[in-house]
Amino acid sequence: MKRQEPMKIKYISEFGLIKRVNNKVPALKNAVLGIGDDCAVINYTKNKYLLSTMDMLIEGVHFDLRKFGAFKVGRKALAVSLSDIAAMGGIPKYCLISLGVPEDMPVKVVDDFYAGFLKLAKEYGVELVGGDTNRSDKLICDVCVIGEVKKENLVLRSEAKIGDIIFITGCLGGSIYGKHLDFTPRLMEAKILTKNFRINSMIDISDGLAGDLKRILEESKVGAVIAQEKIPLSKYALNCDSALYDGEDYELLFTASEKEARKVVENFKKFSGTRLTPIGKIMPKKFGFRVIEKDTNRVVPVEKKGFEHF
Amino acid sequence: MKRQEPMKIKYISEFGLIKRVNNKVPALKNAVLGIGDDCAVINYTKNKYLLSTMDMLIEGVHFDLRKFGAFKVGRKALAVSLSDIAAMGGIPKYCLISLGVPEDMPVKVVDDFYAGFLKLAKEYGVELVGGDTNRSDKLICDVCVIGEVKKENLVLRSEAKIGDIIFITGCLGGSIYGKHLDFTPRLMEAKILTKNFRINSMIDISDGLAGDLKRILEESKVGAVIAQEKIPLSKYALNCDSALYDGEDYELLFTASEKEARKVVENFKKFSGTRLTPIGKIMPKKFGFRVIEKDTNRVVPVEKKGFEHF
Image 1 (cartoon, rainbow over the protein chains, first blue to last red):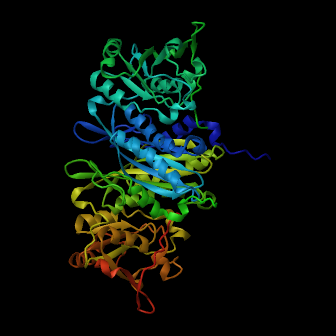
Image 2 (cartoon, rainbow over the protein chains, first blue to last red):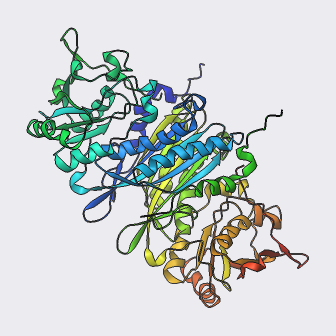
């Protein structure tokens, strides 16, 4: 008799695991929005929601401490969560950090980590209010950011409409060669967008444009077409595919109606020098998710190649 | 010339590291209370504060997955944070979890982990609203719980008064032999105490009675004397010192004025069957922290032996 090997995590993929957990989580009673967007949304005051998001970075998985230096790792530990708050149209207010530290680590490394973390916190007016410190084999940091958003400014992944123009901020691709360590969380851009324009859906690009746009499409039950030649490539991008599939760009991806999109194109530059680019259009669900290839002009289905942990 | 070895984490102790970080954190602007109590306290509604706490558990440091089973680890991952909410007099509402999972881990282990986690969440009406999933070498879980507390029910570590009677719930010691995995977070007891009595200070005993009472004394700038023979020993406690220095009891330690303490002793039992025991008294700071030894009746200074990670 052959003993069957147990089903392992690596066989079901990261999204498979998340879906598996989601299916077991009971329906929400008090929370407005749970798992499935950049932040959880909780009732707060009459005019505002509370936002909450958590991101873990693990030495050897997410960063090489010797290569990057602890200052940049500390900065990034906070920046990734700030990017999530931005993607919902929110303002970050408080943060907590759980840290796992090897006992043989020089104190200076931890000092540098916190220097990077607290410098970014100060820049964005985020207060460090708590956390937990533990012994571990490798440096582990997990950051929770609590923010707020005016109810009328809340932007979800699930409200993209057919005909919407798809925009991105900045340039994409090759973030692994540096930008992932010192990207600017797009809080200012998100604030300008949600305050002055009607944005239908938004997400931050952490796992690659293709993977994250796919999340908007799934949540909004729509399709999309994007033009590869429209996507501004970062100077570190190896090729056009980098912009689609490389992770950790931490730019904003958002959609707005055609009429609103025109206003965005005309007026956003009055508020910010950050590059905004229309790259495609929301289509009916049955259209699927396709890309117009740069050289061939062929319209082809987008492969699923965004970053997954397993 | 001899090259000096860099100062390492293990030489400055866990509390040393926390103090070092605290000294760099800027003064709070919007938060009511930051690092230094069981939870962070944030302004919320007119009558309530928001509470937030984070606790990380790491395989090999905090638990042995094979020995304990993932169900109990999942339960504990949430229970330790619920205990922190209880210690402030609060009600837990929402939680987020960051998980690091080895890719070779059987899916069933993660299922069991979440089963234990979600069962406890359901018992206390806590909604899982978000989190993060990552690949890691060992199982790592970090839980953030967001709760609320009526402003008049908030209890801090820093408000113990000279003459206060010191109480504990339950029995102490030997938690490592089992209780640390399935303790009951003292939310109900905390609710009864804060609703019906005037509690001056409170903390949950996670690092040993001696270590955690010492935190109340430091924050409140007072001293204390406790009678070792008064402390109810768990059946797993090896000896009297277990009750003072063993970690992970997750019972409540609180203080109330002598007058209020009499009311507590008379009336608490009408609300709950949980054992409550007066074990000592808050003294002036110059008295220090002393214990009346069980056998000798000598009054001796309490050694500093609470659990530290480094």
